[in-house]
Length: 318
Image (cartoon, rainbow, N blue to C red; front, side, top):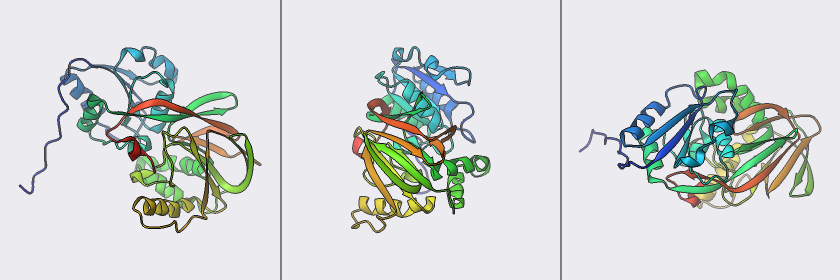
């Protein structure tokens, strides 16, 4: 019958799961449906423990009893998800990247819906894909990331998007990227798996997941489960140089022939990369700008976390 929409699917009944929900109250610009999600789980007999993140509590403290639970729900933006994933690395407790932030690129890469009932279904069905994480070291301090870490124009784009998020939401990143017409360039000095490399450009990214907003591939051949980063060198120009490479990646996925814009970026594979520059450049990882600048070192942590997802392992590759 036309003109009607189907009722949202109901997750299967369960009475045996214990789930830990850790949420960031400062994430996002609106209702994420988290309360509805929790209510639904509890109505199905799931024992839910909720913990609110606070600046005064280390992430590891929220997860002290993580292995007493069947799953962890990380509810927040990409920074919240990656920080919790890093704190729970190698704990063998699956993690749901609940999209409660602005862009939620990790959730998009994992093929997750924003619908609370669909997210509950994913959690209860329990299908996971084990993926790598990144570990970044700056000034002797180590932290984790799931999506990507970068220095230069991408960090400047994120910085300039902060004042736009409240009004434009996800589009804030697009507007900010379009403003990066003449970004600062410098000479970058890299050490890639022990080999030195120098180039002039506007930025460097170490990518683990490879899809931008709307699951458009940043570039081809990025896999979050191959034990390697794809290191993206953005040469002199502007951040919109990424757009032709996204087109090439889509063409490749659809089997439409050879790349048309292969000269815009250079990509390399690495298990470890150190990035320095002639002058300090801003640093971001998983969508959060940090006060630290270059230099930094990023290392891959192979198979560090099992994410709950409806997708297959090959669906996560670009």
